[in-house]
Image (cartoon, rainbow, N blue to C red; front, side, top):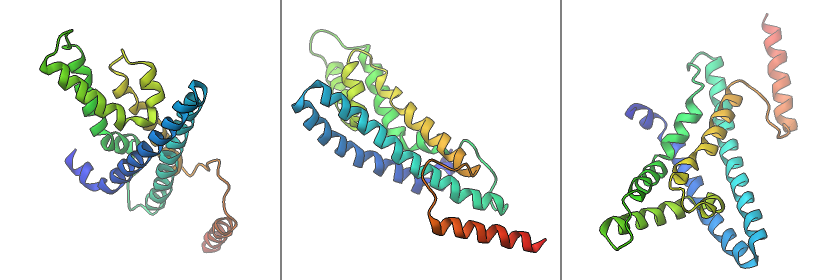
Length: 194
């Protein structure tokens, strides 16, 4: 497990940086959306979620395409779970904060206590760390597991896009003319060898 973290630290760091950048972006979008009304707030929330998932998609499909070259050259073995594990590793902070907020929720009392303060602090931290999904977490304030469940969409997108990348499945983005020429040139040179 520690070896996996060490080997994939740069990819996890990219995921964390994307998450922090989107957190700040989504907070700004939500503030503006909240001032303009509930409809705009919900539309802004859906937009930030889709935009964040697209960033994760592009990051992992690119990594999958890079690894496909290594797999085809037999310098690397195929690992279909890489996208899932790496994204979960990058979101271990999120899962830990969500788990603490979830556990302390059951010990909250009506009066003031240390547990109420701990729960409130962790809930606030995880709420803003998960600002990308704020439209969902704000709609379900009494469901404490929501903070751990927000990891699921990104995990699915990361895993599926990595698998698409290592299997050479073309994504919906058009291929550039230069890349198309290089692919044709590569295929024609491969045919000449035999």
